[in-house]
Length: 254
Image 1 (cartoon, rainbow, N blue to C red):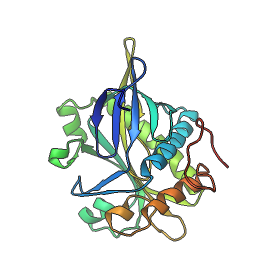
Image 2: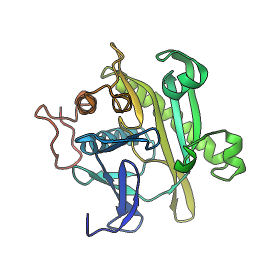
Image 3: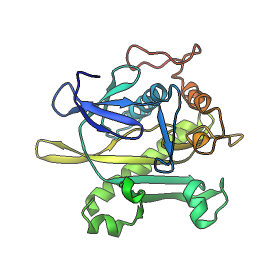
């Protein structure tokens, strides 16, 4: 890592210059934050598990034709990704009432929504990532109408696929956050999925017990945070019975 030039460090990941033009190396940290950084801690092994889980889910999405920035996993904590122009929006999909939706609207946590809801938040830590509308997005030039059409279409497809995939292993996809970027190839631009998909940015509940299996265990001091992340990986078939260890390449362990 010391030989590569660091380009960016966020709460959970570090981006380094990639081995060839148009690529980056994404490093997953064990650092955990909540409340926009107000609460900080370490979840041992989180970076390894998130790297593995995000790799697996990105690969599965690629199989159904969803374009992503993921190229391949390099080692326990790093993956090679395409460099994109990040759109400064967090796209949140809600299937079940939880978190800020329950707080804002007084809807009891766990209430199944009549249909999935898509919300937009402006990516700005200093402003605490405020919720915004399509009018704000197009007015301030963060994305245009065509961009938003692509984002919504991809988001709904991702939600449908991941909801079914996770339900198949006994996990309810309550809500999750996506980020998208513009990938420029020659003179053509397309919107692709970026960032990560992991228990850090998804609310995942056991389908039978509603036990939380995500970062809410850290946010709410519920304990057994590492075990929850490991259980998600185990159910997806990517955690060996012996526990977390590095695998040579993006193979799946049954």
